[in-house]
Length: 438
Image 1 (tube, rainbow, N blue to C red):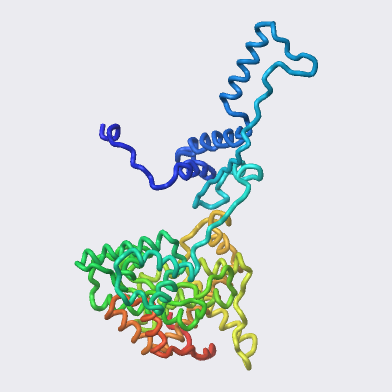
Image 2: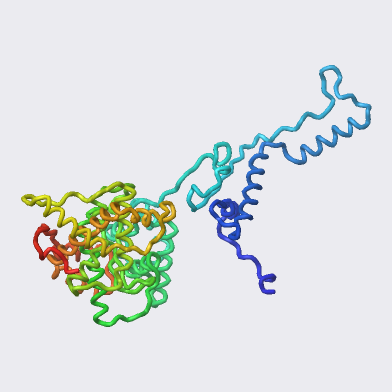
């Protein structure tokens, strides 16, 4: 009964946006409102095709008058060249545009709707650039009470950098959420800390109020420091924005980063750096504890997918190792050892052999591709291991800092990573101490 009496909630979006949602009918099972979507599409297409017809009442009255004149048999249809019937009504001269908007993938829209002659012109809206985000923050921060230090050019630049990929709606939400948090604490204006806390909630979820044991706190800090330090050394194209050991969304901690510049492609060397960054957490655990925790499952799944994609989709292969002075037998032995480590790290929980359904699992069905992907993984892990081992005290300093503060943001994090003086060591693949005990 309540459902019958309760009024329908009004949406802030225009009505035409609601109708466009029903048009996205491809790929939807019939039991998931797919039938209604098809009906809505058909009705829209009929309306679009009939827009050139004359108005209904003009057609109605013209037809009735001409029928009446025909039925009385008095007025002839024409006298000479002069017609004695009302002319056929013409369409209105108004220019009518059909405009729709959707945030679903374009390929899921019905081709009957997007073909030339209907909605044939397509416009994609991108997320704001850094300068755009500065302007948007200027707009929203001007509407809410905030600390004066947020108006400094340095702070505004930092805010614009660490919000890479944010939409205008997300920027508005973090400003609103930051002010709400400030009011909750009895303050009339929000500070930098309120703003970054709101960003963290938007990106990673609300922090869960759990307390780690001292040993677990240190282990999580080491894990995340492994990510941050390897990224700082081997991924110059990115910038760290947050290092946290607070539980959010089922994760004990996280390392957040963003691209320094907006790019749409990458090179093999950059993808290899991404692998080192991903397995850097497990390498740090092996350096400090001699074993790894269960917290590396997500990292290994991501690294496996990356390596398989590099091999099976992008046609990449590991570069030859620098082994001057050693014969092919020694090189083959080292590569075999890297493959063995990579096979141990590889996540093999995906069982599909259908490339389109699961391209990663399909690639790993091929024995040769699996060996090459394993070599990518093994080489990345050994590189990360040697790096953390060489910089063990410095990685420990980063871990201690995040252990104390729980979360470090923006420029504070980058100044910390710069201050410890991380070094990329040369790797001698022939020395036994280079290899982790696994």
